Length: 249
Ligand code: SAH
Image (tube, rainbow, N blue to C red; front, side, top):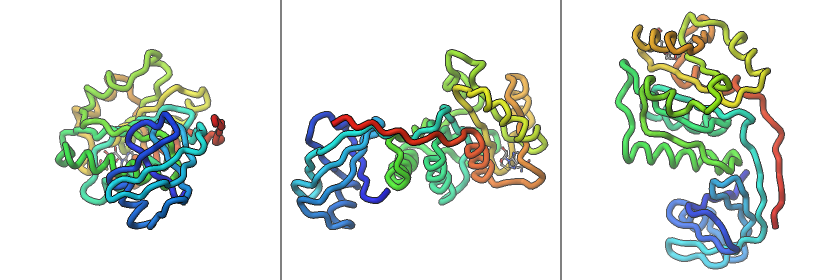
């Protein structure tokens, strides 16, 4: 999926402009010249074939040649709420979550968690979402929310039909994953996954989850890193649907 570029503003007509990091990538890393054809996406679910017209100092102007709806999303709406690991492992987790089709990513505030990202740090995570989407071909961006604790998580993500939301709370000693995934056969509308910090969820947080009917899920006899547990659950939560393409112009 090389040669894909993200356009910040929705593409509506037959013109598009690349700015900031995307313009820099195409102009200075790829050394694009007028006439070169690339693929654009704007997060709307569409993909655009486009031709470079003008390479400016900080902007690139293009003509849109073709517009297609290319759906590479999962069949279920997958929300991953996880205490963030430290340093570079955050970016790695975001990248893999995008690749696996996570729709919403929520930095989970927990009693034993590390400092939460804010402002610039959240922006950097969102930039990682774009980078991963360019690479893996996703045409909708994974949303990265503001940090949220367990009690505020449910109201944020629960759909009108609560019964259709599977809620998995990763906790050593929880029920087998194979049992949790059996419910996927009924095609749930959404799956919500909570993963704790390196210090684990506190007793109060585990009790909170039990009281609200989260399904406690165990992932085997070994203790996994936050990102391993998160990605294991994300990967098990939805069978991969077929890619669908509709050409519009
Ligand atoms: N120190 C904690 C483990 C923390 S691991 C303890 O010993 O309990 C970080 C998080 O990853 C956990 O809070 C849990 O959500 C998830 N996790 C790690 N290993 C797991 C396992 N074997 N089963 C279920 N969840 C696990």
